[in-house]
Length: 421
Ligand code: AMP
Ligand code: GLY
Image 1 (tube, rainbow, N blue to C red):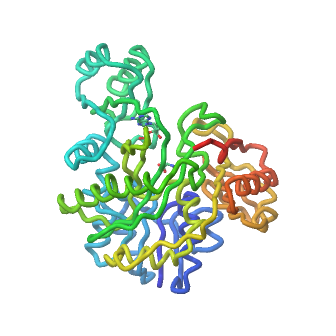
Image 2 (cartoon, rainbow, N blue to C red):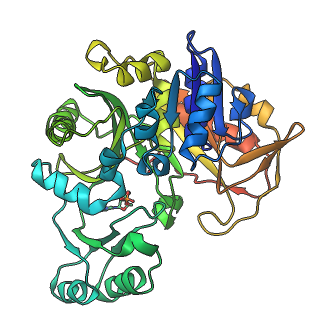
């Protein structure tokens, strides 16, 4: 089969890596790709915002399966367009993608389907939001309704912080039109899990979960990022809790999608807060997480291509997930300054030494290669993943590997995999 993977993150590198292992993967293409993806797939520079160009490429290369990594293309209806034109595509339709692209839509969907989620109010007017804040209990979580590149959520401890946040979002429009509407949500004090399930037209298949580290620095300090590291499994996940997640959250969500007649063939990411053993949905994402994807694919024993095809062919009911039963730790190496401004074009050395270490896979994100020299080319640059028979072993392998890499401009968190969660 000829497969085309859209995106350029470490998530997409791990997707290509997993697909490449399948005996049925004949030719692998990616756009735009990165220095790591380039080693295992043909990278093409296509204007992915122009749907007809994507279709033209698929026809020219006889693509049998398109895998859409980032949400922006799903939000734009690329999946609908390709499917309408006869191209098999992994990733939900534009309507279903609203679960991620509109927090207000997601909240009313959750409420309508009786799924636990923090209580909330929705505002279009600055004055109404301010009046509400003057009377409410703190902390609260303020969320811009639309896509804001993972930055649209602000946790506020008091009325002053909260009024600053709504001024920034609604008056200064720091997130543009994404902040025309806001959600003010109850703060849940618990632990956070990213849970994943494949979804097809008929059913769903749980893939697993990972614990992300969103803040830039150790001990959850610093600004929110796309994710600085992950681990799986959790010390706090019990059979009972996982059963609750599947029955009260995943199943109800998939039934809700069916009721609305939304076409969803892809992976669904449930952002959960667990409080007193009760899971609450704090967000939906309609794609794999990054770095959750890199983490989960290291532990997967299935043929990944077969799993994606089961999803696009509505055959998940015949499929089972099989894992290597390993612990996995993923540490992200980022450019100093990320998630703010940072330099690019700096040499990264010793990658070949790391790639040969036992239990290690390095997935590239913001990298490019000049001759054989790899250079930084983005905020998050590498994901170093390690497997082991327990978390401590996986963690020590990951940090040994990261210390071998020479890159004067990089930084990483030192505490991935040690939280008691
Ligand atoms: P999101 O972009 O929706 O993932 O939110 C960013 C981060 O804010 C999440 O990863 C959580 O750590 C935190 N967060 C969001 N909603 C809540 C909530 N209702 N209670 C506590 N923390 C939250
Ligand atoms: N790591 C969180 C996300 O991909 O949204």
